[in-house]
Length: 274
Length: 262
Image 1 (cartoon, chains in turn orange, red):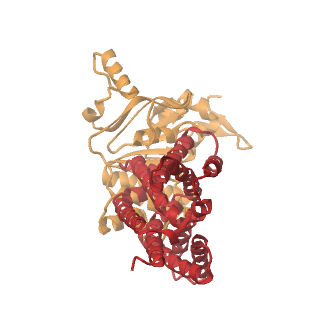
Image 2: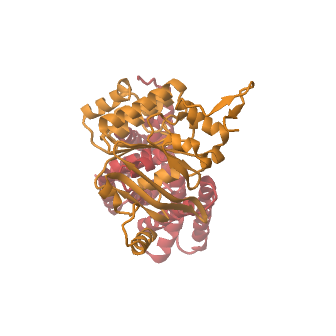
Image 3: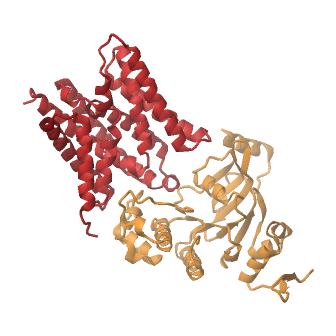
């Protein structure tokens, strides 16, 4: 309905092909192309005018404060939430692996890890074991899902997402509630999966300390796209500093081993330009 | 053999127990015990409407239970009130409406107690045929949607992201659950249906290692409860419906004391 209208309006408006034309995904090798996406709940816009794309081999990280619409954006891309306006164009027949945020499995259902892995798809035993081995969860396959620890379950979810060898991997806060060492491990794992499968990765993080070094594009979200670009570009952009303050830019910068500030005697951040 | 009312009661009870078991598992997994209870309570209204319109009681129950379920799903999406509040409102208001309607039907020889607590000993040959046909049909349809329903039950978002369309599956499940309630109401009554759905499944949980084994074990335990409950009812001249439910409780308590090897 509205989706079609928007697409029609756009093609009517622009006689010259535009970069963000809805059908550009198949032309440019983009796995997904999101154009002017808006999602409302009642009269409140959860996100508005989101434009983003993920190409093969690219890692895109969505960052933003709580309630900025990161999960909503991802859910609209996956078809879980219906967009009010805008389009999500996927390359034909791409397989998507999804690791949702805060998935709770209630203990009332007896469900082994092995069974969980093939809940919607009939993976072979080899594919299941290979996927579990990739995420370091090979010894968990007989365990019951509800008995796993948070970190173990996260590995199983990752294994489940990659078992189908997806073209696009969508991860909603994959390191939530995981300690720092495991966090680095998971980020290394994501980079390795990207290299092995040559898939696109769309990653959500609310913690600016852990924008992974391999990120190609950072999209900074606060209801709309505040700024986007390479981690370097985003860190130095005014919109990013306004949104997160100096602490935010410190975090991204530290991870990139790039110092655009120094510390006062009490640890206070002093910007070089200040 | 079917001439004996007691044999007919046993047969009907066992069929209903087999039917209720897998649906009861989903009631537990989807955390909808009170949802099922609300559907069951609305059944009394369905019974009275069926008696007024002179149609089969089962059809009245099916239509009203399904309508209640759909109203609940709609309200859950639209309303700001929490789920348990909505269930509390609908559950007891439909029951009260049903009781009022029964009370108004003076002259017609309606025995409210038999609808509230079941009347398995009056089951006739036609009833057996209807129960058997419903059991076979509902179990076959459940088997068809088993896999997508299971995936949607574990996590709806994940199922959608992986290409499933869970809303249709879940709607079909509610439709089948309304059919289960429609045939079970005769056996065990409006107030006790949830017990037959939930208790055998809850008992099976500790011993099951897969969703399917939980459903199968629940079916066996439910059938054992029906047979022993009816036997006790005959021996001590107690009400059949409550006797069956007490038997499920006894099995639950005994099993809770048994060790589980893991």
